[in-house]
Image 1 (tube, rainbow, N blue to C red):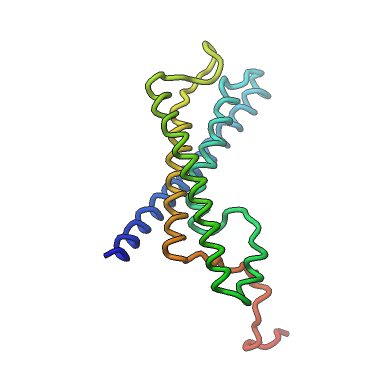
Image 2: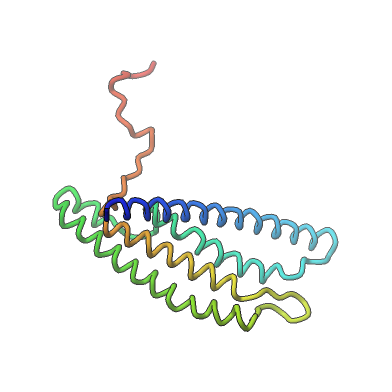
Length: 188
């Protein structure tokens, strides 16, 4: 029962992480269009687009928190795990336990970010606070707070799933040119 629940939760969390990553990628593409349009408007028409600075600020936060859960899911979160990779061959159980501890601490940090940001989202939703220059260009704060809270919460769930399932041994990346192709023999 618990195993099927964890498997189902894992499928849902993975699907949400992939969808959020795709939304983050679309945000990058939209940002590139806006930046290119701004550059063209500045150079050709001598009239920059209003709000480009605010949109870039918002987009960077969106990109980071939309993609963080998928980055955690595929074990591409930037961290120094050289020590763990070296220790894995000598003491695999110790290394696995240490990875679980690191993932548990990471889950706690992601939970704290979500826990702190969600009430701010509720407040900003109600007050309709905005950032930008009034009369020139403004954007509401609540979407930023929502993305931070939901992205952190999803990353927290994925870290917890990694702790429960102990499936966090990232495969070392090897370039194809380093593969040993002795069965094919030397090419002449």
